[in-house]
Image 1 (spheres, helix red, strand yellow):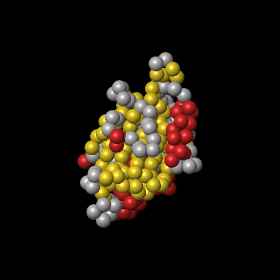
Image 2 (cartoon, rainbow, N blue to C red):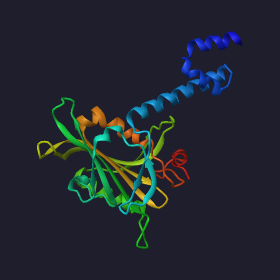
Image 3 (cartoon, rainbow, N blue to C red):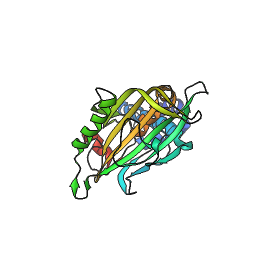
Image 4 (cartoon, one colour):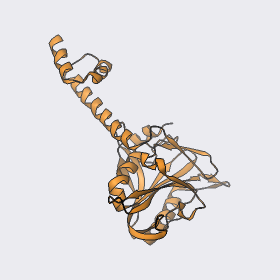
Length: 257
């Protein structure tokens, strides 16, 4: 056994020996499988850590009440501007988001280091009970889909799986639209109509219907935004006790109790 241990130590960097100790001294096939799983998990976490802030951001409703939903925001929003709901740029030009609290806006270049356009993340939350009236999830989703379909025919909600830092996907409910969209060119002080993508996620929490939106021109999205926003959604947690999207049981484990 000593020879086998020395052989594995010659293959494993010194920093990984702690991992081996944590997994035990069984260098059998079972250890090898567990070791590879641990390496994959570590690699997944490293990829998320490169894209996202280490701490979670709580999502609040317009009254500043916490919704129980949290996520890690992309690092690219470090130099962003926070837009209150009253700002005309705080929500997509083709959609009125109910319960909008604020948006984060960050200019990104298209790869030429010349053409900068804004990208956005939108935070909205609707209480499930408002003025003693129950706000139904399916009715809210239908109203949002109808608005989006007016600008982007065929827009519809779908269950999608997103990767997580733990290496196990969670299921979220998303509506994605792509096509020509208006983005205000802050430097040129004019509106540019370019090809863009908008993702809207519907998250279930104990007391709120939470909406998280991501919008970007496609060149900026391909270069910076898509990987970061997908990674951020993989860190979503909720106090709902069920899946954030009302989806798979695996998502429920992620969302917490």
